[in-house]
Length: 318
Ligand code: ADE
Image (cartoon, rainbow, N blue to C red; front, side):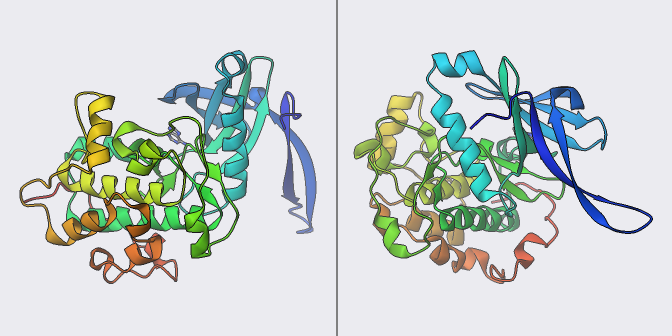
């Protein structure tokens, strides 16, 4: 898997300016080819650092993982899941791009697309809440990205605002696929029933679905649940299931105990009510969510959704 010790082999197309003929060149990239800058984020077993390529000046977000720590904490499996998943999803709209990986004695490196506008949680925190126009714009991209990864057979399992990055045009990019589950690459609705036993809790308390807590099985609908929580949070300024500690949060999730804030828009209320239901089979599919009145006038089929300029960010006014 990580045989590319020291440097990653990259095939680059080089065009001869005189003849216009393109030839393929194999170049090797390693840690010495980048200048490292600010820390962009800290995960439980990784650090993301801004890096600039010495020759092109292009910026990357480099995820650095300490090998010794990964082995000691038995996390090697998750790193490989993340690498394989990102490779399966590469070059897709709405997902952070993995350019290449390499390693040295101490660490593994993921050269990821740099999303200069940070994560969606910071945006929500800065503004407190978001206007209905913003909920529609960001919500549409988030559900389209979720639909896309599902069609590629990937369940993210930890969809949350911190894992939604924003590129330079404020377009959504899902990231952090370390807890993803790869299922059969099949968009057939039958695979939605696929049950997969898993041993341990993955995800984040506030966005975890009841079935994950109860029966410990994984299917695509846990990402839909998280989407419902995020839509709620965009208006309310806080996730629907939030308590003083994880245990109390889990209890609220199991009982599907949440309340809309005063003045919560009816159209978004309706969508949240449809999504945040205990039975995963009763939750709407991505396709059904896209047809909801919240996304009226948006075209999910021709890609224009991803070309429209981002609305000015404003808080929701009751
Ligand atoms: N934080 C974590 N990953 C990032 C990325 N790819 N771009 C910007 N900030 C990040």
